[in-house]
Image (cartoon, rainbow, N blue to C red; front, side, top):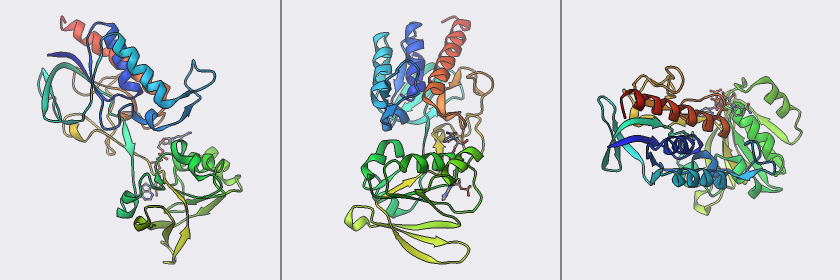
Length: 307
Ligand code: NAP
């Protein structure tokens, strides 16, 4: 029987692990399919306090893990495929092995949303990317396309102008969800070319195992054309990793966990931390803070139950 099982090993999960380990609760951290979370996919992190020269994302999460392990946290590689939170002890199925625990901290994050095209899937890592900070520098002096109309797309398009010879911003409407300030920044950037009311029908060319062009379609005029591109970045939001808790944990329509105050979910003894609940800030430092909150709530809960 575990005191604490932490689902997810990103900034939120590992911070919760540091705190619960230091409280002698011997937490078990289930690493998930993306160990280290979003930070493991980034390069330089310049806004995490305490690192005046910046730090590489993968190094930062690895340090957090080592820090947690030093106090007795255990990390287990694998994914949660099922969870029974209907009674205590809670039961968590990690790829076929059931683990029993008194408390659960859900820090399973949010994964990038894709367009859903087969050609897009085949070219992920071969010119198709969901992370400008990770892959932007591969497209020095080349043609880049960014899909999306929210703040993420604006941020990525702007950032990618550091590398690309041009950045085409493709959005399916002519209205944008992005905030005014971000839109203005993009509008003021001469390297960015707007392509609105347009969807992507195909990314080419899976046969050549590289991105060579995108087939675009204007949804107003019906015009279809192929546009040459080398780097294809999808920035259409994220999907919180809550599918395994469906029907048990309260979520909003998009699947983000609804907070019941602090780090509490609708189930006493089950807590949330990080991007799985946060659709606004999504920062390493806010995720770390949320991990700390969840850990302190779990400690308090266990203490009240006499453990
Ligand atoms: P978002 O605001 O949900 O925007 C997603 C965009 O992708 C929308 O323009 C949407 O188009 C488009 N989209 C969704 N599915 C699509 C599909 N299948 N095909 C084509 N387009 C599709 O997501 P986000 O930009 O990732 O932002 C998420 C949150 O993080 C927001 O609250 C944002 O403010 C915040 N954020 C802030 C910053 C910052 O301030 N620095 C940076 C990044 C993110 P429609 O509009 O037509 O639905």
